[in-house]
Image (cartoon, rainbow, N blue to C red; front, side):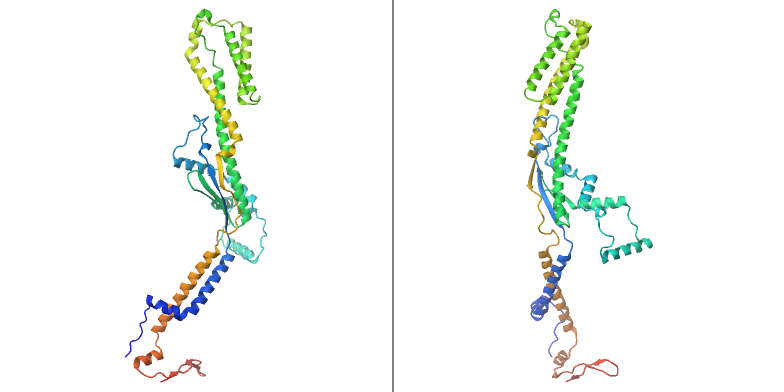
Length: 414
């Protein structure tokens, strides 16, 4: 007696399944591939535009003002500092202006209340949910906050290395995507320049305030001669006034009257002129006595003069640095890739969807073929029974409907 075929399937039966069901497999694979490609066409698309920005290390440091601006040494600190400067642009006010300007916020879109049957159905469901107390509409503040966070999540900022960053924007409209990316690029560059100029301006103002406080307390240094040879106070003021005017003459030949150092020396000149007039009016322009010089503290005055001269020199350096920054602002940044129009969507990819359709159709049809083969092996057929019993198999009668009960009967002839 011949053995019945095994009902189980193994890997060796796969080639036979391909040879037996290859037509249905090809049809299923093509159908799934076509379906996936059509799905990719109707899936909401996402476009991305980006730019690559490099912030050089000299943005954080200038050789003229190195004593004031601390230098970043560790690469992790420099990377975090750069990323923090870029993300400072994404303030709530800027995000709201960006969303309303380009129509990204739902509240800024001028769409009709029910422009399609789907929107009308959606409105009806929302009204029903409100009536049944199943849906609670959000207030304007929470809705604006949610839109703001959604817009922030579309802006991608990730570092390529310590000084280079990729900044991109993802949206469904390619034109809006490009416009927002260009707006981000301009805003980031402008913000970085303003932060640096604000830092230099704060240092400049601090030095000027310190110089102003020192100039009111500084007295001319007494000479090293004997007491009888000490010049009068009026003579010392005249000498300082002469020095200030010589400095003014040298500076005005190179700079305009609006230059900060020229303005400072002009103020110093006016103060010395007023002091000279007061000395002449009061008649106290004689040489100071030994007791007066001792009470004034010569060492303290000398240190104040040194500090005044050092700060005055640094202020001059700082003014040069500010002028250099205004003329060479582009030296601190480099754009490796400019924002470009997105020609292809970031998602969905037709090629990827077609590959998924081929894999799904092939393995799906193979799985169905395996199930069919399994049930064919496990079912009891007349031909298999005749072979097992060693009886001749003549054929099978077709199924005929019964007039009495409406059931189908199968008659076999052996």
